[in-house]
Image (spheres, rainbow, N blue to C red):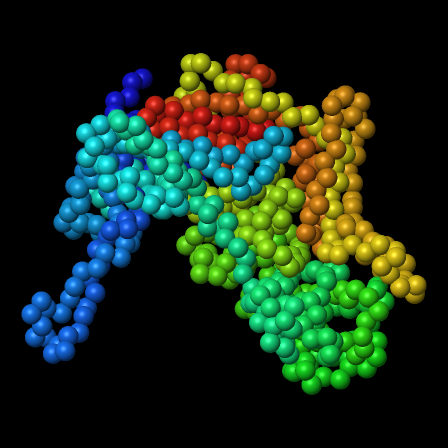
Length: 556
């Protein structure tokens, strides 16, 4: 098979649509001989972009130079390129636009959710775009600001109108490199969207419920789902008013002073006018406040059912979506940024209440890592720029067969030894207290809970250890609250990790952009025990438009 610049064979199509993920070539499913054509849309920042600003003279409308002037204030510009030249139609959504035919490699992109012998969702994915510039006609690119700027790559058939092209990649520019002949734009996925800091209201330090001057500039705590032994922020010492969440919460199940459980005096509308008795506390759930009836003997902690503003997030997936959509400030995600179908499917596997407490600087990516990675789940961004989540399970039910394997054959990248012991931690205590931190009258059940970070359940298989000298032990410390949900997770993780796993790299042709992370595929090969075929999980993809090759990393 040969490939000519600008003409890339799309390969063998089937008519399936990837569940939860848009198939950019669905419209071409019945055209197996179609040749790919690429359009690139780049959005750098130009410091000299002109802007028209209206001016009002002494006598409006009769000034000699008119009512407008041009100032160079800078702004986003749109550069349009292609692999072989293209002009959009007058009726197109972006009409009468010339896409210069200067691109020699429209897209080379690598993405992976496997790290070593385990899954680490959210690892940054990188790639590149190569552009001809031997004549210097694109030297203006060197004056632009590229870092973090948006890039869109579209593909379609040679006879497509502009609006028929489908987006195969949307992400951001990482950097620009160049020599005298070419420009290379290094690209990355949209993780920058979740790398934004999680935002809460800031204490002003003016007193009352705004905190004293020691809290000035500090963020209020955030509490989601079921949270145990969370530390409270003292916002008013004289009134003994504490806060556990920046906003309304569902309930406070318990408050402890050095481990001693205080009596609940009810919920009030205004915490500043409440009068709890000694060894008592009251709540103002609408503001996430707790007030004590006397000065505590030591550290005050609480068991809380957190944020209940709007939809009440309880599960790990619901908490993640709530934070990403409401707590990244102006960068908060919308439904258009998220493959919510993938989150819904993950929610059917990763079930039960979970908890998240934030009282330090974290990002949206940190939140996803904390909720998903320890629970046998992963997250990433699709080539089309959408946030995607999935569960790690033993691969079954392949959606496609791996075809058109390169003549060089596949490569066994690694063999992952099985785990003979797997532990799942659940019901985490946000604050772990030593026996010296606790009062003398603390009951045994409270003491055993607050002095341990997690409760554990364990899977063991001595036969695995006997057969494998390198058999490992794996520990997953989750945000799950209940033992029943932890047991469900343990059963899934045991099926995943208690058997030997093999990771193959498989170079294939005619499959550009056809596979997605999390797909289950059937691999049949005349070696490695694959003669009858076996199902594998797609954990890595490297697409190269210039060569027409895709390299799949398969785990199973």
